[in-house]
Length: 282
Ligand code: GUN
Image 1: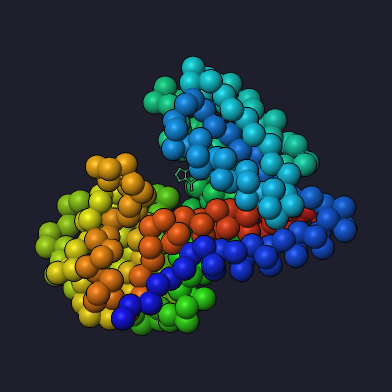
Image 2: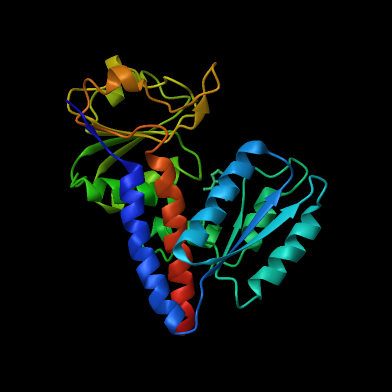
């Protein structure tokens, strides 16, 4: 029988620690502050932003929301970021992606001060990750590493396969696994015979964005399965990239969707914001 990696439970244990550290920091006169920018009316982004604000409240952070209209220009957004970069009450700045097509996303991500870039999307922070000298960890991959650690799943020397090569998940995930001495393969939409590769994996991280992408025949007995997918099926139900029902019969450990990776991503955002706030008194 396969073990469930309970992201909700692990997230709540990490958030307890964050809350305790926040209480200590507040005694020294520092309340961590996160600025969250949302542009336009993407309903999924609205849900994510609400969850992030709620999580801030729970651990005692200040959160500042900037909800901008769809027609906002790149220049207006850059002016807001400049203001937040210089605001001493703001430790972290997060601009919810995707942005409307008319906005220059690269210019926006480059404008956030690397010292307040709690998503770790700025090229400086990507570079720091590449050389293993990071200040902020990319939230979803860091959340996954935390889950593996919590479940005592050692990645050193293991064959780890990451499916997906996005800047948000796939690439930084591969970097963190490599830093922990895994042997890492990244698969993507042009990879030939993915199943031949995944069948040799001890650990699979699926970050594809397609319902039921990872099926039972692609997985070896005892593999650890991490599902980053956040898809809606035909019935509108939230589901991941993994055929959970059948893959869980072969896996040793598996994350559910919902209640797996999702709660950990926000937890790591809180951790990065706390790290940033702590540097105010260092
Ligand atoms: N859109 C989807 N995931 C993320 C994330 O982790 N951070 C931001 N800023 N936008 C996202």
